[in-house]
Image (cartoon, rainbow, N blue to C red):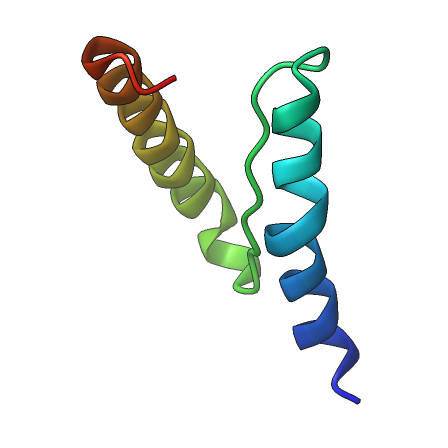
Length: 63
């Protein structure tokens, strides 16, 4: 079993949706960062992407 794949799949399929559906702990997302010298830029881009998606959902009433 590929532990790395299993962990990512578990987070995206069960953990994050479960926390988000609970509603008490805010909105969560999951991202994997593997390039140590690129982490800061990748993190910034991922946060911006998720934030913009959240705003779009709110504006459409899908939240």
